[in-house]
Image 1: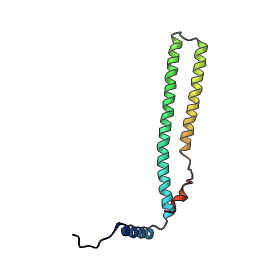
Image 2: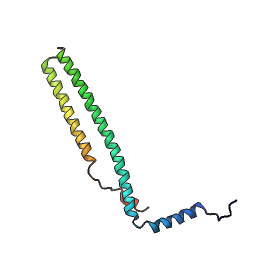
Image 3: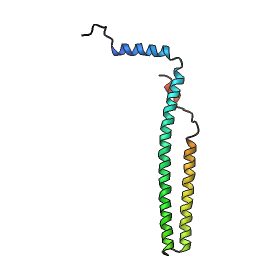
Image 4: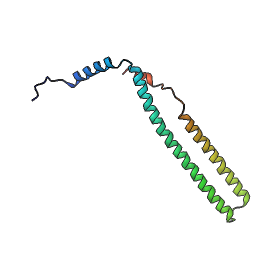
Length: 122
């Protein structure tokens, strides 16, 4: 058996809490910074996923455009039908490219953390 005094977990928690309160003078700013770091990391991950999905959609449409061109070259569709479908694909691609600009633009701005004040009571 150990000859040292017995310290219970709840006593140790209280001691550590008092030490941390003594050492950390600007707790609110530290909590806010930690929440912001977590939020930013999570947002970057979501943005990468969204960008990958949009790029996959663009690639699918480009593949369809290639098939459409092949059909036109082989004479299976006439020029008017080719033009109509090609224009539709081009407008879809333009919309998706705008979506990528919106996604990449949303990651550069700083957003306020409306949830932050709830965490200051820690």
